[in-house]
Image (cartoon, rainbow, N blue to C red; front, side):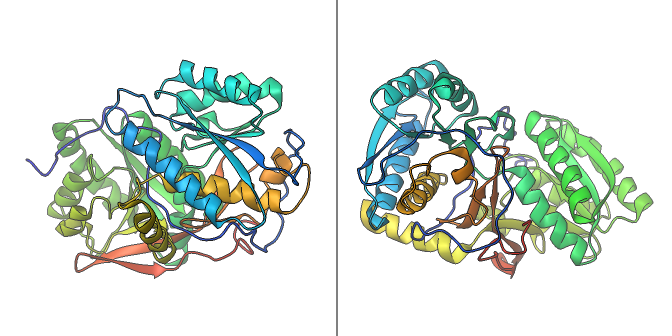
Length: 393
């Protein structure tokens, strides 16, 4: 079956495209956060910021990603008003040891905060390398297991997405969920995120079914998924799979087995609109998934393309977000702008995909829209919030 094209053996700690706006603090309720360390800065002078990108890596695509991150960071710097950022770019070669070495060099060169790197192992190594120097790291990873201490992850997390979708499902009569996940690390993390989100949002996990990482493994799981849905009277099936993995096959075989999307809501933990060809699949029609504010996201892509002659990398906008947060805090004119306590202020920031804020555990919360697929088109059914007032505050 060619519909089941690829299973990723190891998923990178990166995802998704986001979207735009100025580096302005959002007005919202304050979120209690732990006070964290960080350097004192002179806001009357240019603030040295180190950007760590995977240039020099042998991994395909890393050079394009590196350039996109730098481009997005410079685009953000151009949008700042009254704040001067001294951006210094360092190449990590996509390697943890190299990343730690250049991070140390960056701090020796005067960097007051580090933006990047991309991969989880590198971000963890960088955090350890500069922890004693009291420097915070805004990494582009989405792996929550490395977050904490002086390391923050800017990438979209499973927990944030699971919370958004579980809450929406519970509010719309689809909160009795069967979780379907792969037996890899990403599948396990996705399953755990959904279970945690169900507790927090009033949804219920009626059952959990795992599938092996092969075409036959998926096929073999279908009867168990069908029976679990029937025996628990589940109102939804929450799938952790990606469009490059098991999603096409699952959404083909489940309706054939009697788990009809007309009766059971399909929900996806990952983006179902990337790549665009996924929208053509019959099985995803009517499914729910979450995404950054599409209007703001498109604004960023348009501005980036106008500036650089091509589309940004799907996660290139994370560099814009990092500069937006730094610029907003420095613009307030306080010497403690880059401390953990300042970075985790509850009002959050405006980024390329809408609002986001950094949490005291090193993870992040992003304002996401809930979308469905109708007639092979993405349709937003619940808009992304515009502030964090009343959203987990």
